Length: 517
Ligand code: SIN
Image (cartoon, rainbow, N blue to C red; front, side, top):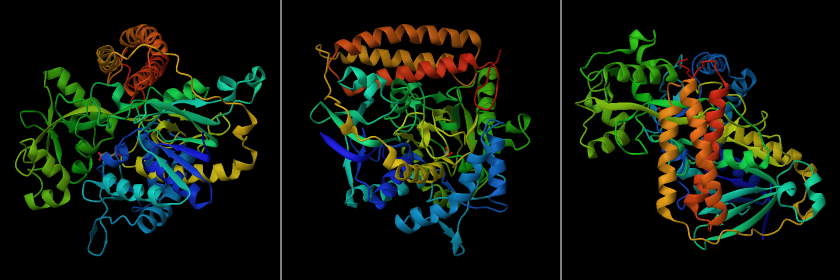
């Protein structure tokens, strides 16, 4: 048995910040990540940067966040991010973690992205997330209060109501006291117990056919929280990033929005700019509008992609220095961005909804907290402003750590209950062909019916098909020995059902949720 004061599930910036702050406050923290290599996270892949401070901020930033959020963002959440962000960025990222952001003329170089009214984004070339994650991961290894468990995939949150051994435990408060986690190396499920559990499991992009998200983003946290009795909100608001490299891959290379911030222009395949026809801000319009405009152009004219052109607007030397990561990665694929445009398409990028929390990361279940992409505190409304997600992880990770400390004396000790070890009911060996085919079916349903443009008919079909698949997969799950791809499939499917149902229930087009009917 592994017992801690707090458990943090996930090692991106949100989980990393929460763990660090809890450890600094003297709590013993267990950090679980399903990735073999903990840097496999959305944080690591983030290119653009992290919002800092620009002219007119914090007020201007609050307005930009709310405007991008299409009237569904919570003003208090935006204000907290704008007011607490810069101090935490300096304290944690620059001083504690020692991240070296790009500078120009002796000061930080501030870049700009779509829907930002002013340059305010710090960056490390075009590999900001990588620099941050590497710095963050040094800490769990070094801090004496943190024990890191890589290769541990959370299976289910432990609640007395669902797992308690005594018949009266079902009358216990709605609370979470730990997690069952599958260890890849031993193929065993371990029981981890704690008074507080913090979900920082990231997003769900892998339930779609094309996404910028890492392979681990299979929606696990949403599904686990849902099964434990937490609430999910705003799940229909799935953000598409307008510019991912056109390819048949499932994980599409992100082409950072900062490239448009530095002057790149979107064009049709025959070289004509088109964004001015859709929005006065042109290629720098909010993401949802750009993604839909590209989709519209592709549908109307049968294009397989559109072009993103930086070569015509910036000198080669600038492009190589400002976008070194993309320059090299695209050159390996035969595209020289200093000389030619990049073929791009919109793909799934970010879940704006998630596990409902207050402004301190508290969910509706006692002892369960959620931070980062898996959480929804209202900050993003119906569409997230670029480069706010790293800062969100930092600010609300810090807040959740403070909430855990404050709540700690009132949280129940798991020792109050008899919470048994995991019992695996499945006896059959998992058949990889079945699991793979179910994944393919799930991804196609979501891509085709719950995509950039939605209709009632498509959404109804999605819900019906997903329900049918769910019955198959549940049956399969109960009878089969656990394996990571099966655990992820069940989670991905359950999360997909919530997304499709939320999209069907909401007839109003707003932000990322666009109903053609
Ligand atoms: C990008 O660099 O375009 C992605 C940044 C973000 O999604 O916030």
